[in-house]
Length: 160
Ligand SMILES: [Zn+2]
Image (cartoon, rainbow, N blue to C red; front, side, top):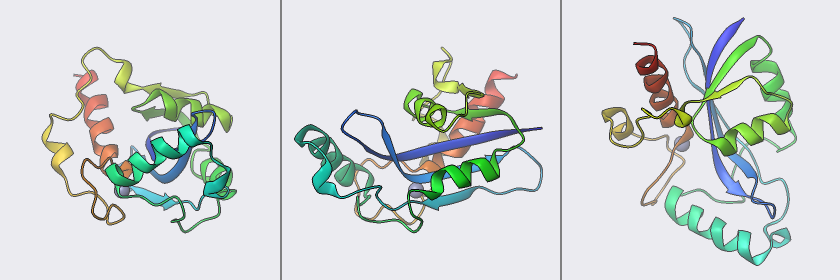
């Protein structure tokens, strides 16, 4: 039984649900590092409606991600989650959309640290860490890999 920190960033679909592009995950143990996966788009850009295209274009600009980028087929999401979270007691996250996304794969055992009134978001030094290398030319990037330590920081703060 283990505790995990997880974050996902990506795009939205026509129902405004999260479409994962970067998934980052770290078990809270003494000898494990952050693991990161990049998923291909689940379908063609043309299948998005105008509203979601517009929002996703902003994500391209802001986070430096491309709809078409990624290494693994989107169908692998479920397999990756099941494989790596099999013994999860609690999965710490930082956004309700990530919670909805996890729930859509059957995971209900998450704790959204951003719901805490003392949640620290962007004004902590850990947020100035270098993001992963997938966010080229972006302006206000959100990097799932970098967010892991921000979530962990909040978990630790909560326990003080
Ligand atoms: Zn990243």
